[in-house]
Image (cartoon, rainbow, N blue to C red; front, top):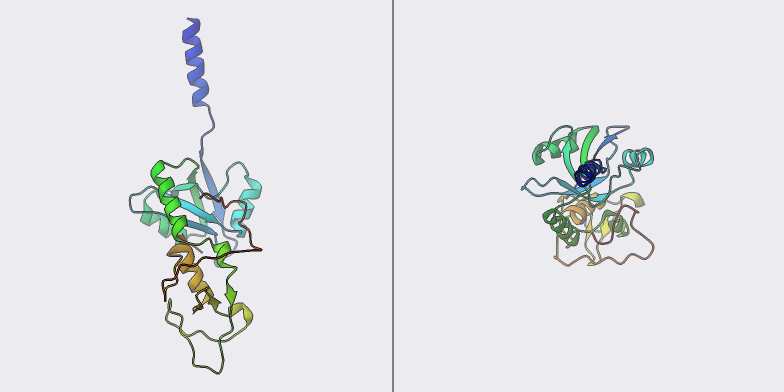
Length: 215
């Protein structure tokens, strides 16, 4: 009888262990605000894997108020606003001003492999920010951004084109999206973008071992 009691007690304790699946709510303060979550996924329906977390206000506010339910690299989003299929979840990410997320910190081996592969193929956005900006020559013939096919126009330093190590210029938003979500190679010459950052360091949420950016 004593052995049976110990076995039942042990099972009961196991059931009460804290779950690694939890809910998160993010709210935009304004429609133009960003959520700051960068994700990767595949069509097999393994959820949306978080590959980077920015410093946007919605994320920071949640992390301050709920440190026990973090939003960080290496987690998977299983559902958004009640939707658990890939396409509806992506639509919610793009269209909604409030996200009710179901998140898990436990990834399967397949999910871990997918996340690692995505991180190897792209460049973290905090690293992209270190790219130099070059003023477009007002007197020379205008160059064209090969990503959006629109002219690179002169303007204030904040709107200057970004230059890859190979020398090619692109609109800053265009090349950031390209490097973070699609490829670490230049879209013009296919040269790999190997960035060595001296002063920049990753946010605490970005893990060293470790594809879309939504507004």
